[in-house]
Length: 274
Length: 286
Image (cartoon, rainbow over all chains, first blue to last red; front, side, top):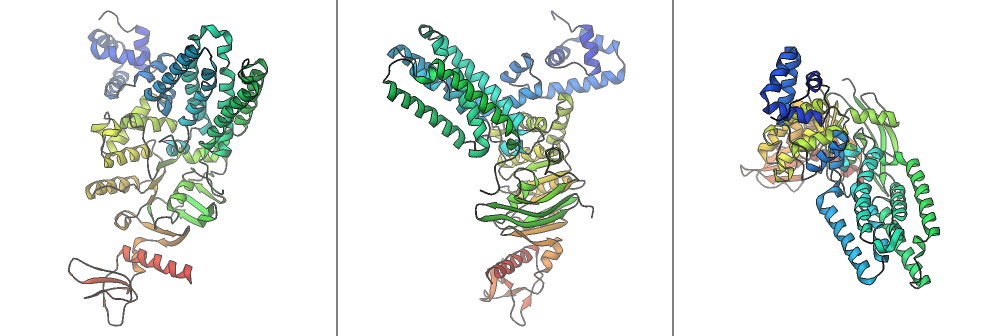
C-alpha cells in the first residue's frame, strides 16, 4: 500500500460521519489494508468498531454504482441525487449517442453547404425532446411509482431537466466549436433552446407530455419555414437576429415563470374529467 | 375495527364514463381483497387512494392524513407502498439499484441506513441472492417480487397492490400469498385481484366492484354465503343456470336459481362473486 487513510478520516469513519466518496475510498482501502484496520481497531471502542465492520461488510456487499453515478458523486452531487439522475431515461448511452450523431451530421452539413442553418434549427429541438422523453407517464417506466412518492414531482422534473440540459447543451456547445467560421452567430441556438424547453414544460400540465413538446417543436419548425419563405435565404433567419434572440430570451423567462406557477400540477398524474 | 383508510363519495369521470361512482370504503389493518371484472374501476380506485390521480369529487384520509392538501398528500405518500398494475423498471438496474432508487424517492437519503433497508426488503421477498443481477435477466415472477420489495421499502403503513399475482405460476403465487399475508400482519393492505382463491386464502374482508361502484363489502364467508342454496349438481347442464360447467367428476356444477329438489352443493367464494355480479347486472338492466 502506497497510502493510508488519514487518522482524522478513520476517526470520522468510526463515528459513521465519513461521507462518499471518501467513505467509498476508505471502505475499499480498509478491505485490503491490515495496517489501517489495526489502527482503527486500537483507536476506538469495540461498539463503534463493530458498527463500522458491519457497515464495511454491507458496503462491500452492495453493488458498485455505475460510471455515470460515480462521476456525479466525484463532482460533488449527493449520492441519492446521483441515483435519481442515473434513472433519467434519456441519459442512457444510446440516446446521447443519437444526439451526438445528429449534431455531427448537422455540423458536417454546415461545412458542406457553407451554411449553419440546419445546425441552428436542429440544436434547439434536442433539449426539448430530451426533457420531454425524461419525464411522463408514456416515457418513464417508473413514472407511476415516482408520482406517488413523497419527493415532489416538480423537484424530480427539475433534477432531470437540469441533467438533460447540461448534457445536451454541452454536446451542442462542443458542436458549435466545430463551426468557428460563423463566430458568435453559431451560438444563436442557445436562447431558442431554453425558450422551447421552458415553453414545452410549462404547457405540459395542460396539453400532456407528448402533445406539449410536439406543439412547441412544430411551432419552431413552422416559424423557421415562414422566416425562410419571407426572407428567401437572405441574411440570418429572424430567430437568430438580435431581435429574435431578445424575443427568445423573453419567451424563456415568461415560460419559466409560468412553469413555476403551475409546479403543483406535476405532483399527480393527469386524470379525472376530460 | 380501527379505521386506517376512510373514503367518502369518490367519483371520477373519464369523459362520459364514470370510472368511480360515489365510492365509499373504510379499511382497517389486515388484507382487504378487491374483486371485480375488467373495467369495474378497481385500478382507478387504487390509483386515487395511492394519490396518483385526484378524484373529481369526494374525500379520503389515510392514517389520519388528508391528501386534499399538499402537506397531507406528502404524509400519505410517506406512509404508502404501491405496486402498480404494470410496474415499470429501469431494465439496466439491478434489483438492489432499483429498490434503492425507490427508497430515495421515499426520502431515505442516509446511504448506510437506506442500503440496510434495501437489503432487508430484498431478503424479505427472497431476492437476496440475485440482488446484483440485471432486472432484464430476471423471470416475470422475480420482477414482480422486485416490485413488491420496492412497495415494502420504508416499512409503509398502507400497502396498495394492483393485481400482483397476475401471470405468476402456482408456486410463485403461493410464495406471493405468503409475502402478502406477512405484510398484512401489521399494515393495511388493499389487494386488487382477479383470483378469487387469493381472496379466500388471504383476506379478512372483500370488496366487489362493478361499473365504478362497490357492490359488496363483507367477509369472504359472507360473499360465499350469497350463493347458499344457489349451487347445485346435475348430470347435464341445467338450461336455467346462470353459469354451469362440467367438473372433473363428470357431473355439472350449476350456479343460479336451482329447480325444485336440486342436489345442492356447498358454495364457494367464486360462486358468491359470480352471483353478486350477475344480480348487479340484472339490477342495472332492469
